[in-house]
Image 1 (cartoon, helix red, strand yellow):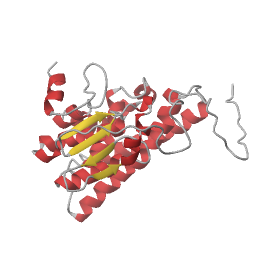
Image 2 (image 1 turned 180 degrees about the vertical axis):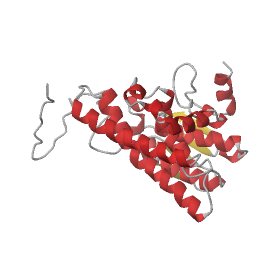
Image 3 (image 1 turned 90 degrees about the vertical axis):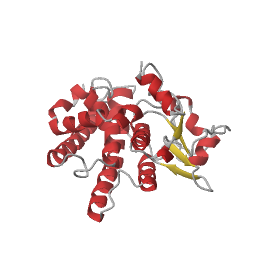
Length: 282
């Protein structure tokens, strides 16, 4: 049976009854829906996030920085429940007018600096601490290119494939096939690159790898969108799997990917290393 056809109206209007797992928070307008200030901890870096693929990027980098001896990377990680609309509070919107996690407030200087968009946060922290970002021009350009590649590809994987495969109220062949094809193309791009180099930007582990692992790590572990790893035949991308398994063994990755997530084995809020230590010791 063919998918039903849809004729777009001359002017689109918001149908608040549209279905889907996130129908209660999706809307075509921006700005705050309610007044609520964000909490503040004692550390110079205040992170407001959720442990989605984009959120994991930042907590992994912060844990990697701490593991590398950068004590100034100590941070408070506050849980933003996007299912309940926390991202539309006045406090969160003041840091990220786009109302998406993650958002960072850097209070290490005289005047707090807001940083939003995961790639921008990775770049800000890598530059701030002089780590996981090459300084040699060619290597730096390669790293930034792969970082931007990941940022550009995430909507195709998450809002595209992930939405229509896992979250849409109806399963239609065309959008699933369209975004599955694009996701497999991206997997192939990464796999071919990692057949040439140990890491995405070359022989050095960088923020490009951290950004990409946030998304591809779930497929490699087999915990992204249900049985999506089987559906996309992820194990066949052997270079990507090798890279993902190497990153998964890193202490910073192990620690960072469990922050701002609820449930057994996770850390909803992180205010000291002991919060993660306690969970990992279980």
